[in-house]
Image (spheres, rainbow over the protein chains, first blue to last red):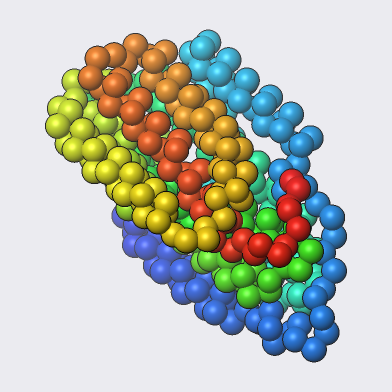
Length: 230
Length: 123
């Protein structure tokens, strides 16, 4: 990744990859079998019991937040760097994996399998994504203050601002589209008679958003590697 | 979504200048526009007949708790680094708008699909 970032063709490769990725994500979402076509003759599929917000997971969220606050308060390089890199890598990998791998797989699953998978995956996503994002941004800002990368006269300040813009776009999509769709799907699945059209509509929104976020994450990888290497 | 985008743009503008001195005019304008849109959205929502307000507040209060915590953490980072004055005020107000707006989006998305004859949902 570092050697590629140093080459002159790295931005062009990244843009081409980004465009191919977007096309793939959109085509898979459009080809997903409809709930109606698969479930019309068989009655509503069974929905396993699940928690919308896994209560045990809240303990891990609390631990992550306490560690983040402790790292910021200590203002030491390693804890800040570790939390920023670990959080950022988790965020990036999850977005890419969800959009590029799990999304296409889910689109081809049978409805009962998709429902079971959704009820196991989505509650965890409710906790994981806000946690890693908050951890990444909070530790990242403190790290930037410590290293001076947020200062306007820092040599790669332009790339730092570019990272703010990319993260900002991702935040609007994730907070405005992805997270509401995530919660609404789970609430719908909790009903005695879930509406399959509502679930299909919201899951398509979720997958489209995840696809776009995955593409934005590629831009993040390019920018972060550029900031690191100068 | 537009209101959220305006707050994010304001945050980017502030972050791009901090910790040095930042001209607050653009940030204040973006915050004001975002707040006006948020209030307008709430007013429009209040006029919808038969809207599932119970479901809206049931979901919204928990989402508000979660986003108040994350907004608090972001605020803490800036306060810890001695941000003060007008920039701190604008940032704090922006975080408040953010912490209210996202739960509102979540609660609205859930409530719009509420069906009165469905049993209540337990988390």
